Length: 380
Ligand code: PLP
Image 1 (cartoon, rainbow, N blue to C red):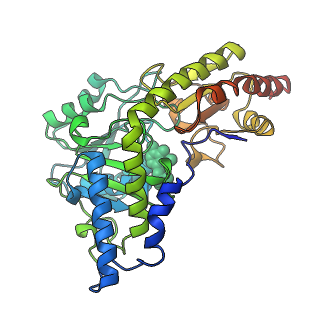
Image 2 (image 1 turned 60 degrees about the horizontal axis):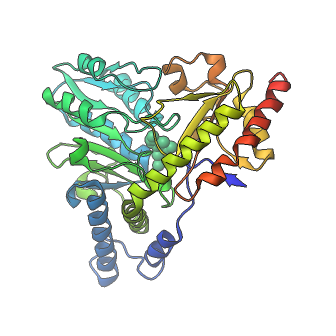
Image 3 (image 1 turned 120 degrees about the horizontal axis):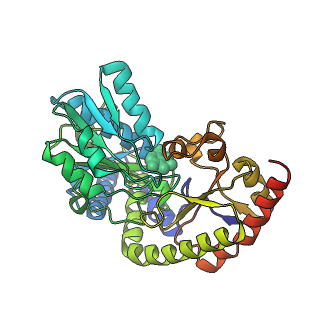
């Protein structure tokens, strides 16, 4: 079996599991406890925070550990918007993850916000001029993802953030899919808030982090004991934080090399699929895209049926975002890119981590061609 669904989740890395193990067993303390067992957990948490801060190029006090990317996005959108005295207007894009879109929708339904959703081009890119035109004096927050989870398009975040800053508007980016592949230095990106999730880079599911600039007021979403400097109450997931930090350290050490290798592998894979499946079309931007994602539409098929045929051939992939799995709706991302609904239902996303090499990927192409032929021959 070859697992090509890394954008949905990845396995926990051995080094990560070994690093977190002590904090689930011997050093299991509560970091708020005033005894040696608690102090040892508090030290591990502080070390993990410092490592994540190094990864993101920020201060340790600006890192809030969360239960994952979804919570980090919720905290960024609701927390920053509700704490801001600027107004009640948000600018975002139609291709954001549901964690962002639904948080914005919550603010609209319950807190009187309005939203401007900037259109994206057929390659998924936000046009900076269109983005700039959406910014208003009462805009509280702009949120644009660094890289899209379905088509892999990478946005010009530093340019967009600079435009927002010209009007004094804070800028958040969802970097969940970019983690491990792209530079997440918040100063280089010029962002005020950034979300990451552990399970996309070899830490377990259920741990993530939000960077939020120390200058930015953030209204908590979870209220309680005041942990995480009051930004996120709840007994800290010490082992999870250690896991995220370990995965981040490993990702940081080999990021450029992994990205270059995976980009070459992606190019070879895309070329092989397009050569062997005559009608196939790559979705997303041709070059401004993640190294580990290639998604296609296969006209005359049904994406879900192609997936089943692929799995019969030992290839595990996805029809889009795992979060939308189980729903029959066409992908909101592809629809926003102008793909019509029927074609959007033929989408298949292949995504991989740094461990998958070019030869293995290219070897998958004939099976993709065979699966697509089978489904097209079935008349879907
Ligand atoms: N944002 C993006 C772009 C994602 O791809 C995902 C998960 O797939 C999330 C947010 C949510 O992260 P988590 O699964 O850690 O809640």
